[in-house]
Amino acid sequence: MRRRLVSAILLLGIGLIAAPAVFQMFSRAPKGGEMINEFRPFMEASKVEQFQDYMAQIDSAHSETSEKLPAFASDNAGMDGETFDTEFPSTAAFNDQWPAIFKDMNDGMLVTMEEMVDNFAAVDALPPFPLFPFFFVAPGIMISLLAWSALQADKKGTSTRSRLKLLALLGIGLIAAPAIFQMFGRAPKGAEMINEFRSLMTEEKLARVQGYFLVLGAAEGELRNSVEPALGLSGSQLGSDFPALAGFHLDWGKISGDMAPMIGAMADNIDNYEAVDALPPFTLFPWFFVIPGVMVAALALAASARGPGLSGKEAFAAALPPPADATGAFFAGLKAKAEGNRASRAQSTEDVPPRQESETR
Image 1 (cartoon, rainbow, N blue to C red):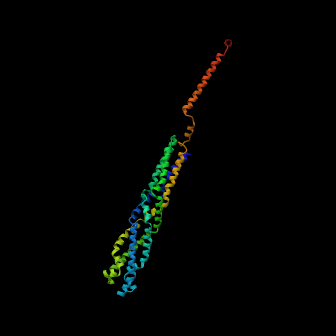
Image 2 (tube, rainbow, N blue to C red):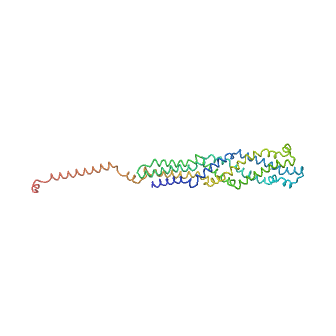
Image 3 (tube, rainbow, N blue to C red):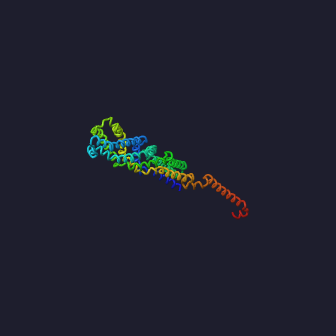
């Protein structure tokens, strides 16, 4: 029975060693670490708020280009709306597409990022992703070696109590690891972030977002180089009558320079995201330590409680009298019996009569 318990511990150790290979963690976990590193500069509350301010600034400029600017063109250049759109197609495309762009980028992407800032911080506070496989392999190797050593010691009839104590401690260490790294609080937040980012981290989505910047860039250039000169809008008049548009011109370089790297980082990490998404759900990770830890500790304690050794021959030998005492008692009995026999023969000789002795001769 004892050997079965220790054999079960050995199998658990081998299972821990095999788990990273089964879940392809050696290739997937480092990709997760790379994604976290590249998202870090953008997943801060202040940075996401700055991006949202950019969206609000462009939205204000859009209100002027879609409403005030066509009216100004009609009043000052006799240009109706249809002519305006024909003469300035990039501006017309911006006016037409911006509501959908704003909804997709601000209400979709940036709001999701804002809601996931704390979740990202929780995941970022976990140990580095590339180390995750070794959190299974290292204790698995130690558990397997100790269990194997205990089984070999049993064959030799030596004590396994110290090995079983170490196995119990390793099991307790596995149980404690998720609490030490706060995995019960952080891992579910990671799972939520992965789920929320699933709609963002696709080639189709990010290609569409990259296309938005082409629309915005073309409109800003056309407004500055063609629309405003054609309508006779000078710098001072533009700032007075169209302040949001003037601000859009002033800040477009910074807006595109700040947001393009964020979109680029997301596009570059689609494969990394998919690798992380293919791992078991983050909510299960604490239990991947706790469950085998409980089993190892319980089996080791159960095996230890059955006595000092593993083998049945040790229990049988313990039930026998000590060899020295058994040998002494045996020879003492033989000696007493021999002395009794000698005394009996001597007594028989003394009791024989002389005549009988002569006749006998």
